[in-house]
Image (cartoon, rainbow, N blue to C red):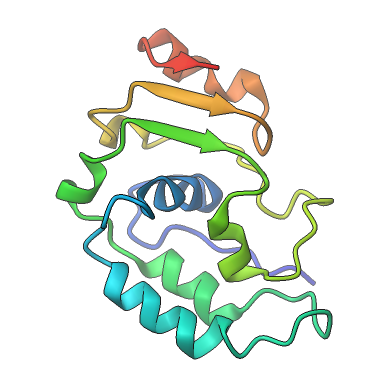
Length: 141
């Protein structure tokens, strides 16, 4: 039923954690923004709402393959874990947040985010998983 994706760059253990990181970059003019806009036009803009609840495979795979550049990663000072994040609707425009499709199981790789200061924890991850970040002094709200 649900295809499982992984971060093919192997920077992050959990694909869904990588999605949260990408979401944190969306308003920071990331280097991949033009390519993402092109992908959205090609795949998301043609999606027929309420016809199919499956993910847009091309978008999910794009994020799996996306190599995040150091200059982009350095822009991240905070991450918000919330089911309403924009990134999820690029993959599943009809997603209602009522399942664990985007649930984050690991934050391994967070040390690649050298300027990360804080996490806003609303949903998508169990607080215990954030413990390594807390130990490293990252604030969790």
